[in-house]
Every structure is written in C-alpha cells, then in structure tokens.
Image (cartoon, rainbow, N blue to C red):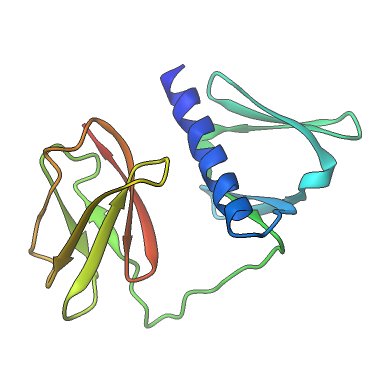
Length: 162
C-alpha cells in the first residue's frame, strides 16, 4: 500500500511539473526496464489505477493495458514524443549507496565544483551543496526516511533514505 502511494505521488509530481511549466502534457511515455518505450496519447487514456504492484491503463476505447511497477523504469508526461540519445562521451551520473542511511556519493560528476540540490517529492528544496570530486560525501543523516530527487549538472537522480 505504501509503495502504491509513493508511486502515485511520483506520478502526480511529474505531471504537475509539466503543467506548472505551461506545457499541457499530451503523451504518457513509459520507459520499461527492458529498454523498450511506449508512448500513449493522454486523450486516449480514460483512467490510470494502481492495484497492488500493477499499473492499469483504461483506454477510451474500452481496452486495458497493465504494467508491473517493477517493470517500469520511468513515466514521462510530454507534449511531444521525443527520444533523446546521450552522446557516447557523456558519462551518466549515479548516486551510491542507494538506498542510503547517513551519506551518499556521486559517481561520474564533472571536474571542478558541482552544485547538488536535493528535493522532496513535493518539490521543496532540502539541501544545496557544492562538491568537487567523487570522493566527497553528502551528509543525509538529517533527512527523514523516504524517496528524494537529486539534481546535479542538469541531470536528475532519485535515491532512497532508510
């Protein structure tokens, strides 16, 4: 039940970001853990429900689609279906350990000073820090248990605090 509520909160958080930025989302794009993507016009979706660990899409034509939440990597709301390719020379930043208890580190950050911002799921900024290298730790011991978003170098990451 708790996982269902968190998943729903994340869904509405991302949907709210699109609306706040003045873009009316027109597509729901599912990025699945096997690397496949599925884009669906929001106008064809009548209802989105979560049952246990399954997301069910009820379409306007009366059909249904179901997806195991463990098989969903991302839910994106966009005004256009666009697939972006990350150039080979750009390293993906990662956060570890994840889940974490007292501290986190970032892997593959750029040289020099990097600004790191940690957000709650409702968008509130909880921590802003400047780190210089991958050996530097961010103290998260004061954060409550839960899910958080981290932004560094225009990349967003998620992590869990235990």
